[in-house]
Length: 117
Image (tube, rainbow, N blue to C red):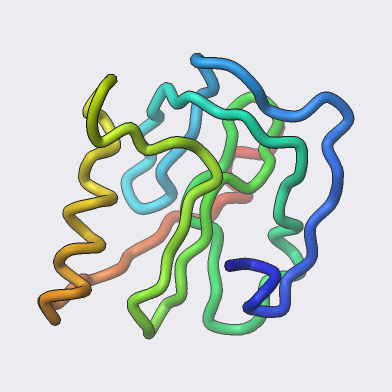
């Protein structure tokens, strides 16, 4: 989705792999433990206007999700696991269904720069 929007990606040295990758939700500041298996990341600085980071990895501050601020588009880089595992991020599927149903989906994001070390 980020490439289609016009952003760029870069190859991670080792990738984010495994079952215990911490991701910070920039809407709430809550950290979720997520399963991941990817070797590329979105360059958050290359996101076009109206696109914002939605999640960041708490280990390396890489982008783990993006959201459009006015249209019903969002994605995550990790596996949301709505079934067959933890249900911590099942709200992402509920948000998607809300978009499909045309329900209002308010968006308030925190500044991801607050998490830089």
